[in-house]
Image (tube, rainbow, N blue to C red; front, top):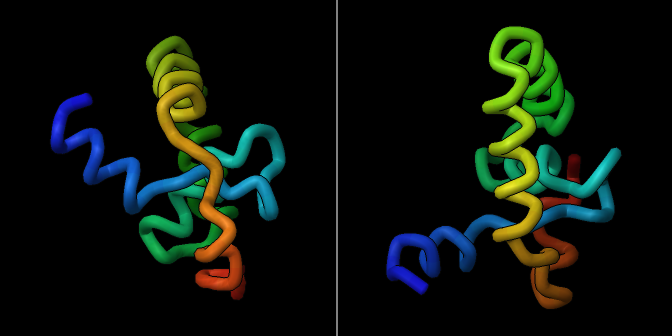
Length: 79
């Protein structure tokens, strides 16, 4: 795996605790330190205009990102 992708995977994870579907939006919200609702609304709006790109991005993120490690489970739990 390439170095930039390894760095990204160390910092960004799926968040299945706050997930609606697969945890991609909740994981991105944790990474950006924002509310998952904001990310979800952004994905829905993006899906209205560029549906295929949004679906492709979501599925690729779901396949590439790992679940949040258990040692970080308590971190960012305020969402």
